[in-house]
Image (cartoon, rainbow over all chains, first blue to last red; front, side, top):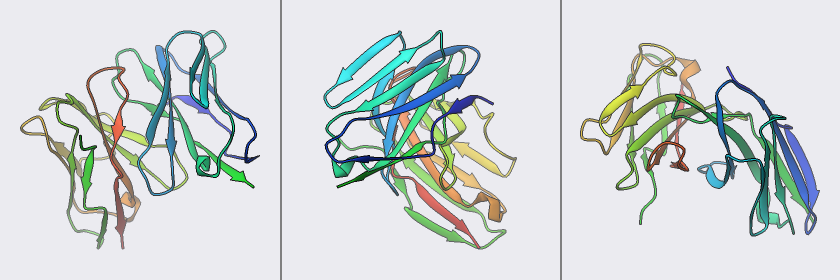
Length: 110
Length: 113
């Protein structure tokens, strides 16, 4: 299988910034996706990185370092509605599906 | 337009029964995926269709699992002779193609008693 590691749980304060890390070890790495999943709901697409560097999209940014096998998702100006699981997923050459980590459950507190 | 639609939303079955789960992808999406998600885990790949062709079924856990997409649109995942370990959320996703964002349905929560 693929070794995709994320912290299991994180807690952060409303209005703050939080960084969720993801490390991976996989042959044939192609790109990395971040998804948000509220309990009982569908995962929703947040970002996609294929090249090294930072991709910014509103309050959310995602970073990738291919040489280090490392990515992070940065959430700014946290809101209560950001409490959810954040899933890191990689794609590989020769495969069409996503390979997911176990997800990081983020709790935003007042 | 409408997103990915899955039905039923919840399914309870007795061990040994057969179940069928339906996925209606986003119109025009060529690629369709089925994933299985256990509680507190990330989704795990089951099978992949490109139009009506099932190109990858390497994730299906046993020959009790069968999926089809006969007209390249709606897909059905069938599980025969269900067992308790089949209890999970089954997610369907569709996309325009390779390395495009996959759009997920809300899933079917399957409970086997």
